Structures are given as structure tokens and as C-alpha cells.
Image (tube, rainbow, N blue to C red):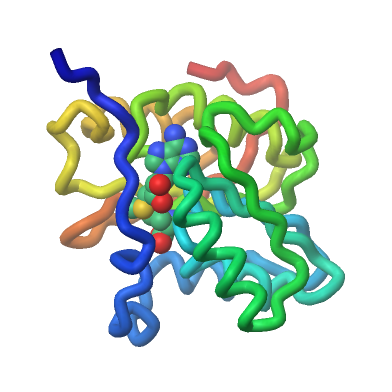
Length: 192
Ligand SMILES: C[S@@+](CC[C@H](N)C(=O)[O-])C[C@H]1O[C@@H](n2cnc3c(N)ncnc32)[C@H](O)[C@@H]1O
């Protein structure tokens, strides 16, 4: 009997050459919300296509925590950061649903592109996002539409519930993803 597991990709797939010429809501989010000196979290970073952009945006006085469940992806990220001379990225191999090494309310900006639809414990990951973000901090979260029905995927009603856990600043949809820009609510918001 096969048991479903989180989905990992060959790191090279997430670094395909044309990707650096593409732009989307992820790039707009980074441009608008990531400032020098911030502490950022890239949850489900893969080999760090966006973690390196976050690193440049926060600058040498900022920090990027990059977390991925796949050791090969994290090693690739560390090698790329080394080659690019980016010294402000701390990379961790772990489940996004269990990041106790990141202090509560320590994150100024959260980025999580295409993670939730690759993992089983959506609620665990969202709870960790909520725990580590500072009140009022911004986050970008996206999920793939393609995998919606495969068990790991995030069905529409669940996506709406996840969005409502936060304060929604902006949201949208492309052919392949649903995305949301959120703000971490204060303690008085009823979490779902
Ligand atoms: C679609 S990729 C996106 C990677 C990256 N955010 C990007 O945009 O290039 C999803 C990533 O989630 C990671 N992942 C899957 N399950 C995970 C889990 N439970 N905890 C942390 N990362 C996980 C995979 O290894 C993969 O790198």
C-alpha cells in the first residue's frame, strides 16, 4: 500500500533558464514589500530562485531564512548563494510545518510560493507562518491550480479558509496559480 508523501522536485526544474526573464505577482510583492534590514522567511524555498532575490532586497543588514523539506534543494541553494556572494541567507532542511528554530513574531516578511500544494500538512504550515510573522507584517502565499485535486493540492474552499486566517491585502489568479498578499492579524482575529 503506498502512502502519499510531500512532493519534491529536482532542484534544476525550479531554476529553468527562462524563469529569470518571467515576472509575476511574486516579483511585484518583493519589489513593494521587502525592504533593507528586514528579516524574511522563504518557506518552501526550493533551490532559492526567490530566496536570492529576497537576499538582495533585504541587503547585508537583513536576513533571509530559507526552509525546504528537500536536502538536495537546500544544498543547491547554499551553493548558489555562495557563488553569488550572498552571505545573509540561512538555509534549513525541515518541514514547513515544524520550524521551531525560527522565533515567534520574528519575521518581517513571509514568502511562500507553491509550497502548500506540495505538502500534506497545510494547516501545520499555515500555523507556523502565523506564529513566526510579526503582527501587521506582510506575506505572499501562492498555490498551484494544477494539483488541486491530487490530495496534496489545496481545494478552492480550503484556499478561501487559509486566506481568511489572515487579513487579505490583495489576491489574484493566473492560469497556473492562485496567490494572496496577506497581513498578519492581531490576536483578536478568530483563527479558523
Ligand atoms: C513548487 S516548489 C516551489 C519552490 C520555490 N518556492 C520556487 O518558487 O521556486 C515547492 C517546494 O516545496 C518543498 N516542499 C514540499 N513539501 C515540503 C514540506 N513539508 N516542508 C518544506 N518544504 C516542502 C519542495 O521540496 C519544493 O522545493
